Image (cartoon, rainbow, N blue to C red; front, top):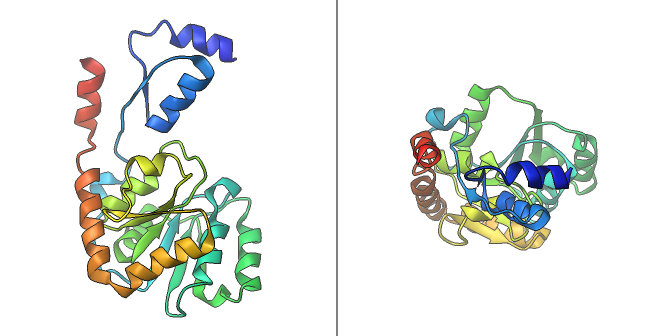
Length: 221
């Protein structure tokens, strides 16, 4: 498969990947160079800002590489007033729910399962921040969706694609993949909602520059 991919992709006039992290894999396994060409998420035109509430949001599948369990362990190290809403489902949901119970925070974590678009948009709008610590993510729509709702993103140093957008201390926080590091970042946002809003505004400025017009211009150039 690698040989065939290398041969067929090598015949292309230009190669694009959805993120630098994806392009790096193409270089590693196929020896081919691709340009990162970011596109907006599906909900881009519908996302809106709202109040910075008393919960942090996890959006997406509950799978091992998404590390929702890490978010739960971080929540257990934060003040009792903070809540976590998990919008998404997956094979690891039962394990993460068990982790919440074992840490004594099940009353502070709401597992919604899969949600409709309208509900997700509302959840983004009312969140304090979005916690998104996947391992080696390709691109990650969640980052841009969060920014378009003017919410700061807390991610990890080994999260891959999100780090192409999140700048530590500028539009969110980039932490070591450890519960206490994430907890500290969440507490900083909870203690200073004006700071959370400023970081969210900076994220919005990044995300609004990514448009389908820009994608088309790059492809037809």
